[in-house]
Image (cartoon, rainbow, N blue to C red; front, top):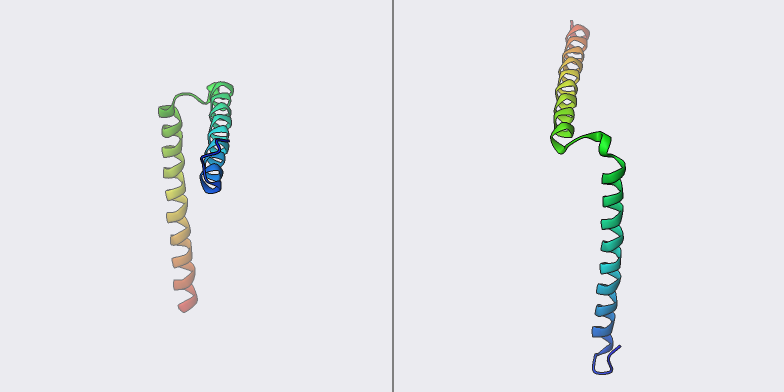
Length: 77
């Protein structure tokens, strides 16, 4: 390192170097995942699938709430 830097400055620069290296590794991993998983389709396709799951989950939640309400109402009677 440069002799005119304080130990704190050297430490900060080393940390930035480590962060930069980690970000490069992360970028490479993301690119590899994108290349490997091209069969997943476009982001719009993924979003459409997530919306479909969201609707199904909401329906299940509604049915569960109805069942619980029915059970509680029956238990009170």
